[in-house]
Image: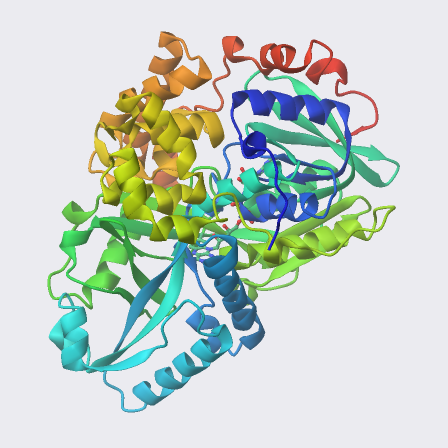
Length: 602
Ligand SMILES: Cc1cc2nc3c(=O)[nH]c(=O)nc-3n(C[C@H](O)[C@H](O)[C@H](O)COP(=O)(O)OP(=O)(O)OC[C@H]3O[C@@H](n4cnc5c(N)ncnc54)[C@H](O)[C@@H]3O)c2cc1C
């Protein structure tokens, strides 16, 4: 277990810290610059920083705004891969599941039960049962129950929503789930805690070259529009489905290609499906999950090729119909479009060699060195991000001119993990000390872990922050403020879609919460009335565009509808300039001191 004690604030990702991070980026020569603040890139930054390397992490949009907030949110070995006899992948993923549940992030990762309905073939119970036995065995049992066989009657008691004719019995097994966006942001915070310079809204727009070697990146600050030259001994490309775009900026061919496959999920209220367990249902080509998610179910997913806008993958009506049709095959009371509260689509970064056919796309990860000074890492799954990060940093370390210790992220707890269990056991005491309902304390512990004190202190000073957020009563006002002050949220959509999930958990998709949330963020980010209005307008336009896209018959029409909304990150504000922040934070000689110029590619 890591015993390093660092200042309480070193993990903070507020506006001042962003300014300081960008100032450092303009001044230092880093051992490693990581491009991409998804779970892979954030994991690389943490891995490198916790080995004592100097690290910068740059994310073009928001942490986890790509695939890492749009997954099925399962930390799992993947029963499917077992069937494909990919035992190595399953064993590795199950080891990560155990680490995340028990050591690294027990506040963010929790067990989830699944029911596998058996549909009638005589051999099925023996076949699936053997698979479950192996799955449990490969994973070890720590922290999770073993699978169990159920009769039809017992299965229907757990899952009255199932059509009685759709099963002859069932097997229940356990996996784990995570709030992916929150976990990714927490990994980035932990990297900052160990000294990484971390900035979102900072897009890599070019690479520095000295001869053949990559020696850094050119970054555009999304707030000010200024360019910063960041020098590094090694650059890691962890840009998910944007990997090839980054590689094009280098100007040379990569060693592998990444293509995108779209997966769509629906969110429905808990009372629409009578279940005391999650479900895993077989489809013709894959599986469909019904996953408990607070007061909701997440139902998904699909798997189709996507070649359109990568920042805003759109779900069409056909996608939604497809998910509904699949789940309805198993349900006694079919779901309709009227039951759908929220919809989200994400893009799987699938690896493909240049000669491979689409059917051979791999879900395993790859690390390559396309040119000296540059490491590319892609593929894999959310669950195995730590292994991907370790392998990428190992590859970078081989070219560094010094001894680099091995990865220690298997014993490095994420921010909020240390002390979580003791606090959780003492939640009644926390409730009476703070005057909050125990359910609120549980909610906060499950999102912030041992960092709950940060929020309780703010509420003690300003009791209005302890009130529920208008339009999204599951969340408290203090969480919105904290997202801006400590968790790197810079726009309203960061809070409504990723720090919270109000955009998919409310019928109005967060429209009622938008104005009050923007007001709370404004206190931290010094927004003018005009900026508040712009943020709210942008968010409204985004919701309308998403709704329109979900009425379209196909991908092209859905993409056109979705991209018709202005992108809040494209609208730069002169009054919100990083240069001004940098002057406050570090004096005038910082971000623009080293301008983009000589020796740059492309
Ligand atoms: C529908 C779906 C369901 C899934 N379900 C699961 C699951 O249940 N369990 C599981 O283990 N895995 C799951 N996965 C897989 C998992 O989500 C992904 O493997 C993982 O999130 C990929 O993370 P990443 O960091 O590689 O990519 P991303 O999260 O996309 O991160 C890449 C980042 O790079 C940034 N970037 C791009 N270009 C630049 C630039 N020029 N400068 C700076 N930054 C840049 C992007 O903005 C982005 O934030 C699922 C995937 C999908 C699509």
